[in-house]
Image (tube, rainbow, N blue to C red; front, side):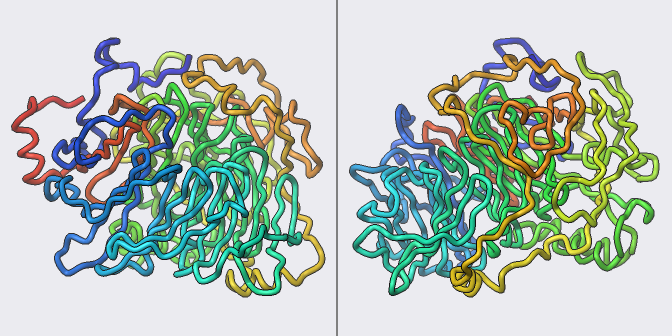
Length: 614
């Protein structure tokens, strides 16, 4: 069984203790007990049979400087509070809005950050019976109810998000495997919608709503087989990553309604997905207990991470934590203009601190910088894992000696038991001028590849860039693109990675909650095969670029792996001053970043043992 060095430290009793602080290379993260949000009675919620607790944030930009608002669901209840974070203790006696639903439960929600003000916010709420509600918790109003009669879809809403940059368009996914694009200005009609085919590809199709007057839904996507568990828009809003119960990650050009690439889980369904701040990498997690890193440019798995002992429920990039190092000009593939254009936009508005650092470096020195990506994951094993994605994993073919960082494959120390360090001798390097399909000329990989220990030291990655990275066709805007595409009679055929039909055994009931990597028997060192554009035999998926074998890609070990809750974890959100987690008992926890503890933490520590770092 694969167990990380960090997770293996300490005895059995210590492993079961709930941690209240942990240390990374940045310093100590501390749990702020007085900043805990929950139901007002603070009683643990009996989560048997209920939907996962979810959390959404919005900043309303009020003049008081305390503009953060938090929304979370617990069972049939939905709460809306002022979020005081690391500044002040939470006051649970005064929710701005509280709603209790009958006959259905909230499953997910999302704020429109574009329209939020101190007087009004637009919050979408998805429900277990399939409806979607638009509410304003500040005005305490309910604007509209979509799919009210369940004529569009009767299954549970799994994910709902506003389309980036839009005040009126939103996307909803369901347990049926369908996604629907809505406009808040349009009605849903009094009869079931009729559809006409717009585009289709291997295991997906897109239909428009056929009616005399414009009505919801504008588009219906049918993606894979089984539930569509989650989706996420790329930082520029042009691409959409979807993960499904059939175990596939599918990435679409959203405006052009075209499939960009795919990936298959090691086994079981994929449950969660997120993008790196620059849109170059996608991380997915699920029932194989792994986190899988997929390159958007190369359309291939570049690493897997193992630290969880059960299903991974949430993955998220930390847009505020990064290591920036200068590197030699000859490490960079592409023009200086392309590099600066990409790096200045790294992180976008979500991580202004990172963006300013990168912009400053590029404005004063034409030499490129290296970036270490930080992401996190939480799972049903009640553990939080943090991961560093470093240059030895991203660019194994580049000579490490040319980059002025402190990173070695294993930090020049003895490897943990079971780890083998062999340099990958393949001479093929990945160029940024890739078309976005399979990496051309990909040779079979060596059977043992470097692990990343993610040790607490300043590490960097040499960033290669691509000409026209995200300049795929956008269809001229979502509104006109949909209408123009709907008129088209031909169905486009795409040169994509082939998908396979899902076997019936991939239902959730067939997966045990604690089925871990210890049960995986991976015995071959077969050569990595290139996928063809023909349909793939499901039995032959393992060992291809769609799903490499465990020994064919680098294995990440977590920077930290800590048990932080009694019940399964369902939320992980990185904010500027803290990170936020939540468990199925209905407790939303705030973890102050190093140096962000302040007075509140001093009050907390007075009632707890001091000086203990776990």
